[in-house]
Length: 449
Ligand code: ADP
Ligand code: MG
View 1 (tube, rainbow, N blue to C red):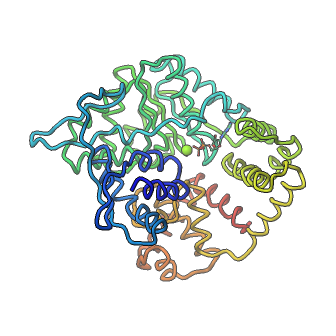
View 2: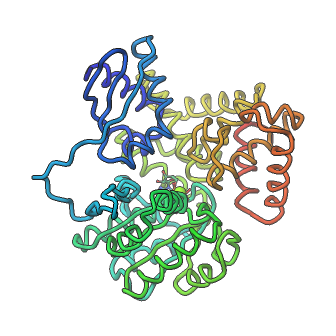
View 3: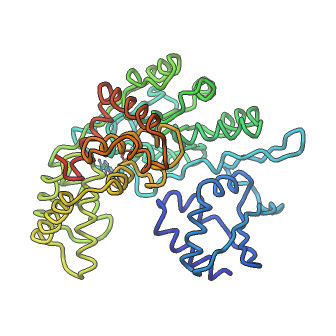
């Protein structure tokens, strides 16, 4: 059984985003395999529900690919070990009047990515202000720069700086409790608490839980009055207690329509810092540093060549380097300028080959760190609906698909649903630079520009 799960787990590791894998799959323990059903143990009911809702199909697929048989999956909540003590930042699980356990929020707290430190962050004119602000906050959390609001386009290093602040504070002040979350996760936490009628405990938990609150991609918080009010009260409580809050977003607070006014004005109280795309010299330094971290030789002329070809987001730039280094590794060759040129030309030609709707969806998904299933599927929060509208828009404009054809690709949506999504997109294109930049970068990748 362990063997079966280990093999399925290996497949899942390849198929899922590393964060999702570490957060939701790595924690599963197989415990029974009877009558074609596998029972998997998870830490609590909330985790069980989340895995059931989001990963059950992927787990079943992986089991099928491992055994070529259909394997049923059940989840069981692990019995707490009474001798185990709680970790410092864990939340004691409280019980409601009925004795039913309410979901803990510790499972929703994102881990800080190990690689996202200040040491690994290359500073140039484009980001030196954010870098200094981040260091100042790390030295004096809750001090002069509270809240710190960081904004900039996709793939420019916002999450990197946010996590770097977390790492630095942890290093300088290990006793401080750090909570790292995102607009989307915060929304899920609030919604789950509402569903399980545990709002009161959720509020006290959030406020009692952290000295530093890091919120990534606030633009993806739900516009629901309820969620926003909860965020507002959480922010106020932390702020009044002198706790540090750091927020990232794709736009400045003033342009964030999704936020209600009183929340927006709170975010404007502190320091607002933006990140711009890096200039060519900074791009070269980023590439050289990445090669150094991953311990391979990157000749300077190759770094210069890639930096001159990829001028948009740092994520794209890193993607180009990854392709070259993966090729070198596979072919057991050293990286050369000639190799980098050939690979870039090949990518460009592939980009110019026939583009299918499937490829559009995959490219949009990659750009936003989502899966194609998310893009096509039923989820409605902004973190997936905006990428979905963008995919629909590109398929309409470049592949010339009709509305009903687009509807069929996107989980059989009706043509009126597609139309309303496209209208929203057309409006956003007029007002939101981030959406425009995303469409431009994605179309570039697809060879449409
Ligand atoms: P964002 O959150 O703005 O979309 P990320 O923080 O995820 O972007 O950054 C995308 C990638 O680019 C990450 O791998 C990150 O480490 C890298 N990156 C961005 N800016 C820098 C920088 N100045 N130095 C080194 N790496 C960077
Ligand atoms: Mg990010």
